Amino acid sequence: MPGGDETALAAIDRTETGGVDHLVARMPGPAEAAWFEIGPGVPLLVQTRVSSDRRGPVRVIETRYAADRCRLLYGLGEAAGRPPVPR
Image (cartoon, rainbow, N blue to C red; front, side, top):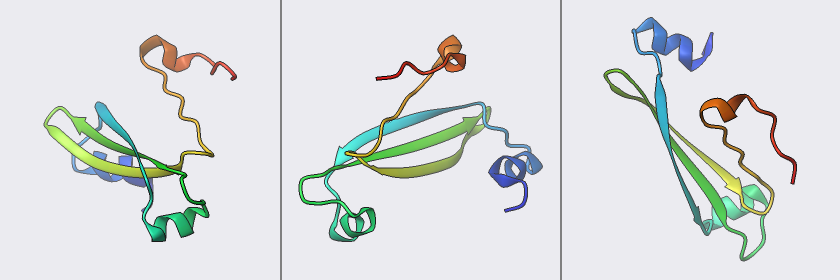
């Protein structure tokens, strides 16, 4: 979509002001395992984000990651602007 989701939301006076992430690890179904090209025993990490504005929820995004190939790094508040700590 031209301008992205934020532009479309702003056009209807809905600007995200916050969100909540829900993270869960689960085993993939056969189609997911094939798509991610993962072997037996490798779980998926599923992130569901619900973004809201002053009037309530405006967007839900679900993202799936192969748990053996990802690392999520979150910054909150002042920590959001700091460089990540390598591990």
